[in-house]
Structures are given as C-alpha cells and as structure tokens.
Image (tube, rainbow, N blue to C red):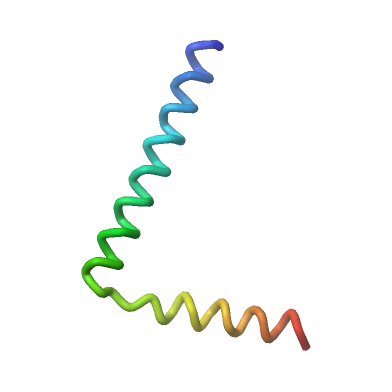
Length: 49
C-alpha cells in the first residue's frame, strides 16, 4: 500500500472511532436525540406519501 493510502485509512479509522466515542458519551449522558429522530420521521413520511 502506498503511504498516502495508509494515512488516509488511518484517518478514517480514527474518525470512525471518534464518532463512536462521541455517540456513546451522549447516550451515557442521556442527551436527547429528538431532533434527529423527528427529521427521520418527517423524511419517512415524505417518502411514503
């Protein structure tokens, strides 16, 4: 593998791990994700009808 591809892969892995940590921390803290859930609900309604 080239050095650039290795660095790119490493960055992606670190970004994904950071996202997982942030999401877990929010869940443990009890942060409401209602706005995101509401947007998903609205989007599914648009797709259905």
